[in-house]
Length: 233
Image (cartoon, rainbow, N blue to C red; front, top):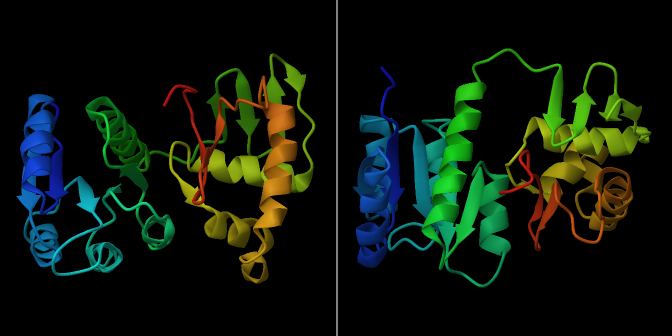
């Protein structure tokens, strides 16, 4: 028997609660609702959820602080909801541990897709670390530092492979520019995004069928990049 996933919805907007909670319940999820950051942290401690949908604009605490406090108690995926036009808050939340974000207004199927991906990734986290990952018609062999399409090697530089491998190991998750720069070049490069822009451009030319309209290596404007494992999210 499959256990029902428990989702904690954290949002003080009654219209969002009335729309999202029934939607999730109709898809078989158990849903708890919290209206403030304090309630959210208490709920996480009392009844640990499998996933958290978190609004950044809460009445008592900033969303980034709520995310930080939640992370002290659980590694459950956190999907940010944000109606703010600026990207600073979303970047900060992703940098301190959020897994994804959805911008308001949003389509219900988009939110459901993000939730399915996050829960699938959570389930896979307990499995042995994969030696290779297949994305569309491309296979990434981590141990051999090899990338293959239809039995033909795609020749990447070491940095290009490092970037692709980092995104592949975090497939369908947004990685911020800062997080990628630190992982690839180290802490001294976090304020030099031009390195990443150039590297991503080079990688897309080798990986994407049409680099002008990326299918796998997607940009999250002003935030970072995401490798889409299915090519459809």
